[in-house]
Length: 101
Image (spheres, rainbow, N blue to C red):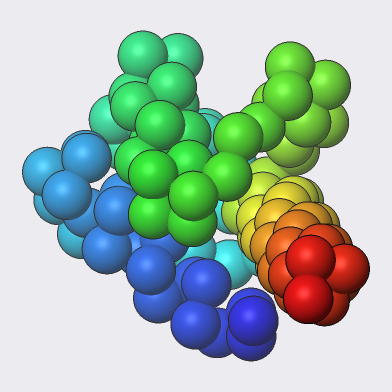
């Protein structure tokens, strides 16, 4: 998954959640740089991101988020991990089918 693609989807999520698009999402963008990005909207944003990418952030993941760049890195890591998990499950499923035959 490409950084540009993630940034575009994050921009849409931020715009929908915050109700405006008068901000730029750069790697070093933080909550201080975006009007309306407070602790409540932060959790709303995280919820929408988790739904969009079908991932779950741990408390430690959330505590390590410093800016948009670290958020993108966390998304890539979670999405990559879930793809590996799905591939492994599919492989195990195929293997169990072979054993049944």
